[in-house]
Image 1: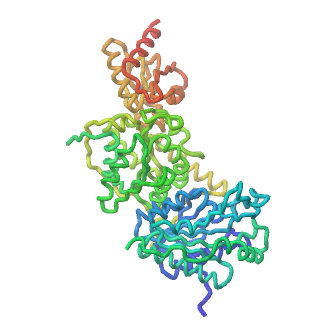
Image 2 (image 1 turned 90 degrees about the horizontal axis):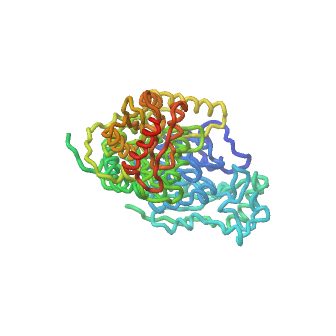
Image 3 (image 1 turned 30 degrees about the vertical axis):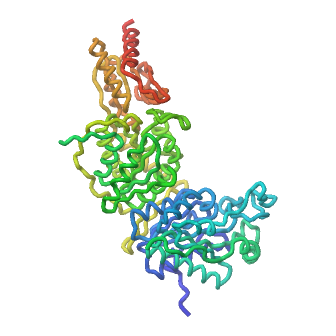
Length: 247
Length: 352
């Protein structure tokens, strides 16, 4: 049994995340991967606007805070000038799949050699629970109080499926953080993303299904159940792209 | 020194490369395309050179944020509607104190406007280039040679004061071919100890950020930035001007070239006219304008706009002199005779 210690790449301060939110777990997984690969000194992280806006406080590598949705463009600028460094973005669903759709799609299409950690919790957390591009049909939110009606609010976007059609995407996997088994699988996927980057293979995205107990109005445990019952059927876990982009 | 015939846009791009700019991020828009094309041709041949045609102006300016934030010398260029799109990113770049150069080869607006030359972005550039308590230095070249010289200057100011700097050109300057020379001066390697480019386990981590939730901290950041603005105002303003004129014509960029012709014609006819040409629009060369108007009875501002520089001229002179305006807009370049006619009208009313 290995020692359960705080990863060095994770700063030893309390986070601002709500109790029961899975951001903390996912931060830890990214930090563990950075530790395991010994790349903290060669990594630059980009955090978004949204719940993880203060992510630059929590990682011990160099960090940048980007404007809403623009993290993949910011990461492109960093990576092109520093092709031998590791660059990751950490983005939520509003940031990545609504206001930043263009930046996401085109960084993927260019095959930018970056790793995107995409937190999909089907809601805008930081601003108080508005409808997200990944909010499920029928799901209530502050701005879909009668439940998301696809006739008027349209349909959720399945990012991994969409991006997997692009030739620039070397790796796309959807994982979840609902139990120890899925958390281990999530870490493995994040590691895979960073390995793809290390080998300069192209764009990698790890979508992590995540809970938002506060804005879903559920206890942390019930939130996990809600994720399993509602999100897993709509957003199936799995590898959506694993291909040779550049050799 | 060897002279090369180049378009203003190409001269600007070549000057940037010679200044040591290795990274360019841009998006196609007329009338600045020669800069993007030149960069795409030449940067990939340079060791470490980076050219990216971004998905949008927003993408390009955010690539600049990332690149500049990692300590690399970089530039983007656009034209008026594209600059509006970059506005958000420029504000973040200011908020994070990142050096970079932004070129605006102005065309007419509002909206899609026209692809013809214009100077209608003066207000945007000098007063409202991004949200928040901020300014950025605005340099105003009036020839292809100044496109060269000011590009070098722009990078120097950007790195010395940790700020984006804008070169505010116009479609005429960008497209016009003129002989230029390069003095082959590249800038020294800038300090990048603050940059987020990997701490290599040898220094504390660096963070590039514009978010300060503590009002005291944000206020201090802004006040410190405004101290730098004071230094820029003290040291970096520039203008060229005639002294002792009774009728002072104030113009920048391409319009100043036309105004020069008009002033020379007026002088040939015995009218005591002179030209005042600001080379920086923010900070505005107030002291220089006061000196240029010591004997003046009237100031005539000429622009390719509805008169966006007029207020800065009036305020610099503390409303002590009458200030008149003549301009063309919508893509017209005023001709010397139009300005000369206006000078003559003022001469008559001045003597009346």
